Image 1 (spheres, one colour):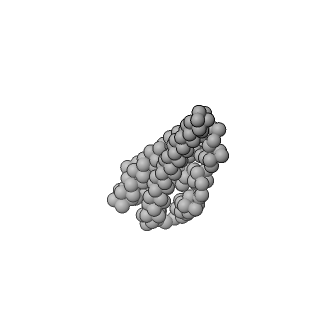
Image 2 (cartoon, rainbow, N blue to C red; image 1 turned 90 degrees about the horizontal axis):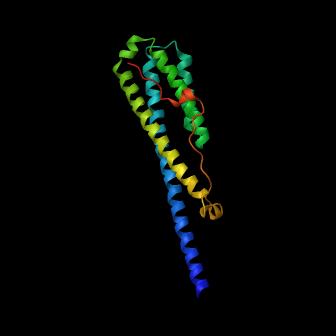
Image 3 (tube, rainbow, N blue to C red; image 1 turned 30 degrees about the horizontal axis):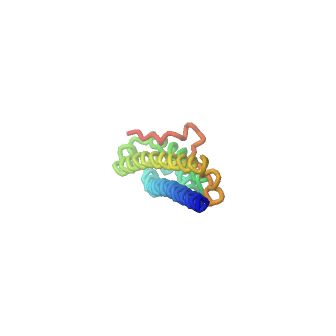
Length: 180
């Protein structure tokens, strides 16, 4: 009888542990989807921004093509590490684009350009918050699978550590500067 009670307690503990890990894994996936939503919004804004700049700075083709290429590479990136690296390239390309805009006073005064800059700045803020949420979810999940008693069962139950969204270059950690 005592053996049966011990087995029942172990089964209940494992079920509770499993359910907790599933909830944490889903929180990581949900947080990643929020990053994905903000990145899509960012990538959707970039062609409009480039088209607006083209009218004023047609001879700056190399910078504009660099932004488009960075966007295309980022859209096709798969996985957390690849997405983070592609995001770094997009951020650098946008910095060049905004630096280019500084050379064209008429462009800086264009309402469409100003609106796109504001939308992009808002998106950068939301993207930053989504990255923080994602990394917080990853930290909670990775901690949960790494502590006792979960560490004994997590790997067997298919729970593996997740990658953090990391920006390697300190200059790229800041959102692109939007100047008016």
